[in-house]
Amino acid sequence: AQKLGIIQSRGLGDIVIALPIAHYYHEQGWEIHWPICEEFRTHFDQTAPWVHWHSVRTDASSFFLEQPRDTLKRVGVSETLTLYQALTGQDFHKTCHFQHMSFDRYKYQQAQVPFLMKWQLSRAITRRRDREDLLAERIRQELKGRPYTLIHMMGSDHRASFDSQILPEECAHIEINDLTDCFWDWMTAIEQAHSVITVDSVFSNAIDQLSLLDDDSRYFVPRSHIQLTPVLGNYWTWLENTQLPPQARVFNVN
Image (tube, rainbow, N blue to C red):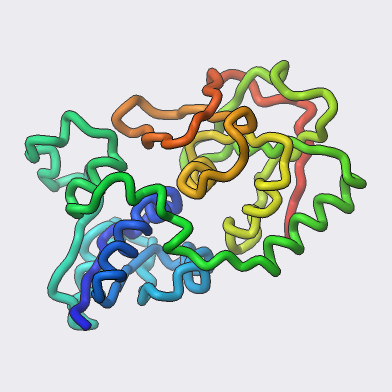
């Protein structure tokens, strides 16, 4: 098979957004090679095993472009898709569509993949139900069956907050702030939650792209301006980024 390299070494949300792009080409017979930051490998090795994942070190700025390019060259990849929409020293902004698209739509435009494929994420991943069920069962036992709201306020470089008055009184409030070594492990717990309140992050991307939960159960807290906020295909209630609820309890998974 012909080899195709994906250059998008981080972050977690960006990789999830781009997974359907890679899968689109995988279904056309391409062998996909994708260098990502080494700390992200545990999230994707078994969830998307059809990708040849490669680790790049994050101890220098070269993990954005230079290391991925060197890695892909070393394994014999000649065709690459560079999916960054902004990078120091690069002129991505010179494309005629740059100023008119959110960053996620830009990735799909650059890859020449229909943007609607973004919501075909379920075809691109293998959910590890045993791990998901184990975490969901721990939550059920801890709460003795009480309904719960999951709260995720930590993005890669931002801590968000919101007005705690919107939290349902009948629910326990669990803050996701200490991930397992694979964030996908939370998907069943999310599906079983009364509601989920999440900042713009890998969790909001995964929930939206997999169409998890009902329309009245998804709450989104933005953290960026319009061009750096992903397009949400499902209905979400948007909340102002204000104050973290003091009654949110921490549920650590070790």
